Amino acid sequence: MNRVFAAQLAGLPVFGPDGEPIGKVRDLVAGLRVGRQPPRVLGVVVEMVTRRRIFVPMLRVSSIEPNAVTLSTGSVNLRRFTKRPTEVLVVGQVLDARVTVAATDIPAVVVDAAMEPTRTRDWMITRVAVRERMGRLGRRGPVQVLRWEEVTGLGLAELVSQPQGAHQLIAVFDTMRAADVAYALHELPAKRRYEVADALDDERLADVIEELPEDDQKDLLAHLDDERAADILEAMNPDDAADLLAGLPELDKNRLLELMEPEESAPVRRLLEYSFDTAGGLMTPEPVALTPDATIAEALARARNPDLTPALSSMVFVCRPPTGTPTGRYLGCVHLQRLLREPPSDLVAGALDADLPRLPPTAPLMEVTKYFATYNLVCAPVVDDEEHLLGAVTVDDVLDHLLPADWRESGLREDTRDPDTQDEATGEVTHA
Image 1 (cartoon, rainbow, N blue to C red):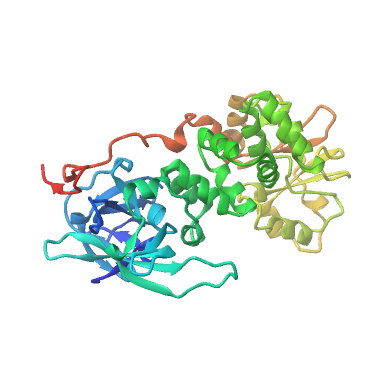
Image 2 (tube, one colour):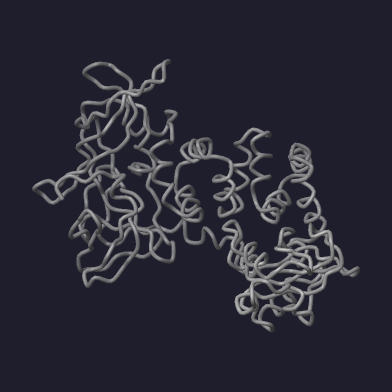
């Protein structure tokens, strides 16, 4: 391909020289140059199947096709990508940038950027697709594809300081899982991260914040005004919201809890009563709970809820009314596999596993871990001394607390360039 647009490249699969899958393209790294010269594309940010993001120099890219990118032979550094001060992420920072069309002085917004190869095998960002900024009547102008030098406002200082929208970047994020969006946000400069957070709707932002490292969670929450921060906490899973609030100063925590709707803050307050490393602190207070006269068909319908995690949908809990936690007397559970084997019209009471041990809310993390290992489960009931179901612990919450505190961002501060590296000032590729 002679001209490749960044937004179309993002998300394409990346294959090695022998056809083995490597990961997906997430961004292009460009080195801005003096004046209005087109920037050189230094490499590609590739997200591997392990979600680690690595830098692949353009010299390692042998072909770019409409449906895939192929790497040439040679070694690629597998350490995490870290952007250097004189570099920009084309998708992350150039898209949505506010510019001016030099010939007409008309303000516009960048909706895409295209790179082209030169005779020296370098790739340059030669074109930008721009749309005139919306006027007071809300009309959107046509998209124009202009040469890089035909627009102003794309210098490094301008990209770092100017406010940007996030429409095009959000469009790219729409195809990604929340955990992948969180990884992408972590790599963006703080200013750009805030712009994206402001543009995301509450539900999507809540999903993304749940996947961020703790420091990034607190930073984003502090950026939001109190009313929206409370809305985001309401949209989060109660256990994740409780974990986030538990790390805030007492004054901030209480202020946000007061701003939340009472029915949303009540389960979060209950979780905050327990230590974070106990079954009570790990559990979600919203398991699938039914009365014994519910049918197998009803139980399966509840388990099919797409908002449930696979772990939480693996077990249905049966109890006397009320079914909201803390429930009436807990009777037992029904495993998803058992539900699939029973006639849909039968009652869940007939498929009950009443012998499975329960976890007390005060059970420490190690006891919870041993419980999962002993019974080969991915979900477990948390029941108090009075036989009320308080919630359920899932294996992903256990793993989250067993891993090192910085597991989401381990290695992010490592240098990421291999022996074929770029000079920070010029973007030139040098060979060791």
